[in-house]
Image (tube, rainbow, N blue to C red; front, top):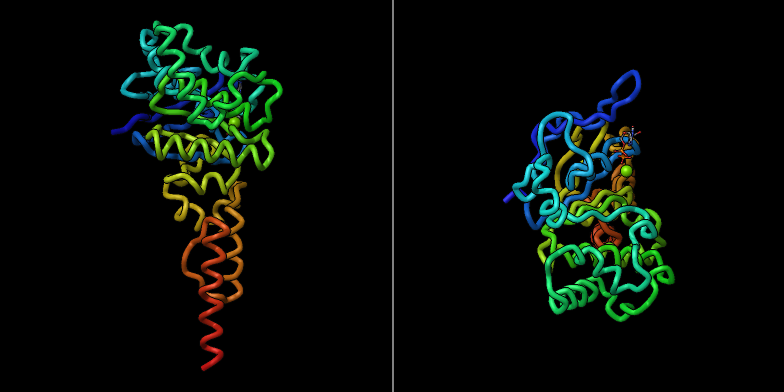
Length: 286
Ligand SMILES: Nc1ncnc2c1ncn2[C@@H]1O[C@H](COP(=O)(O)OP(=O)(O)O)[C@@H](O)[C@H]1O
Ligand SMILES: [Mg+2]
């Protein structure tokens, strides 16, 4: 089942004299339970697309439905925002309360649910992002990665089917990035939550099932990461790169070392290099 469907989705920000097309007839279907990464250089329309998923922006042309709800249906706005949560780049802008567990409960205050259920949800959400032990702490004293996980917990408490994250790791240090990526992966694999991750880190995109490359508001590539990152030259032309492990194998290939597999992680890369090295050694021995 598709949880997100766009049909010829178009958008432009109104400007004084002209109109610049930011989304140019997008047809993107996203399956429930999948993990999709969206990449593209600055200004390619990624955030604009994300903002269409929970009706922060409405299409100028075409349509987008999320969980079967047309996002321009005002009567269903609340239901829509409950089904598709958004996490943004700056964790400090997303914190509203002075205690972690109250922050996570904040979004639930408007829902007609009893205290007990609220408690249960907050606890489950904090456990899911591995922040339960910090529930009594002040959010502003947490690290960036911890804050971002609290923001994710706040969304989780609403029990969404889909979470859209717009460069959630851009302001984090390597450890924070790892924590947030591990959390995203586990929510996808274990809780079957659909993930749409916008990122400019190629190694993060490599962890998705599918990578969509946006350029000038159009889809340029849409395939599993191994297929997309095979196109290193074309991606570089779009101002993008590939994961370091992929680039290393491409560079070795250019030097005549025959590694067939596209590698996405240092581990895969090491294994491939090792296997050709072993191969060369055995040939030398003969
Ligand atoms: N609020 C806005 N008003 C006018 N133009 C905007 C606004 N937000 C973004 N844009 C323009 O729309 C284009 C796409 O922006 P955006 O979706 O933020 O791209 P990305 O997230 O891929 O960097 C850019 O040219 C940007 O300058
Ligand atoms: Mg953006």
